[in-house]
Length: 95
Image 1 (spheres, helix red, strand yellow):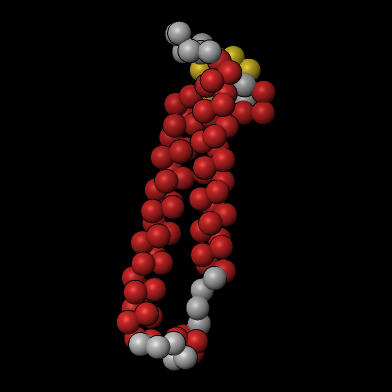
Image 2 (tube, rainbow, N blue to C red):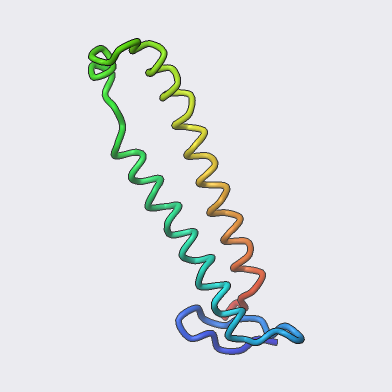
């Protein structure tokens, strides 16, 4: 059973749970997903060019840490967005 969720579409009706609370949860999860996408884009735009590392103290260590951690951060953000989307799918109905 589903009920109109306003801006979030249809939300599931859960026994003993106010529909407004489900709507609020779905809205919050959608915000999380959008924030992850925005942050991923910002990380990509904030990339440090290789020649800039030469100007940093102990540039090799900094560069290695940067190149190791940035892809992992992007993966973590993607996973966080996917988790949020799976919860959204659980609490919403397909129209």
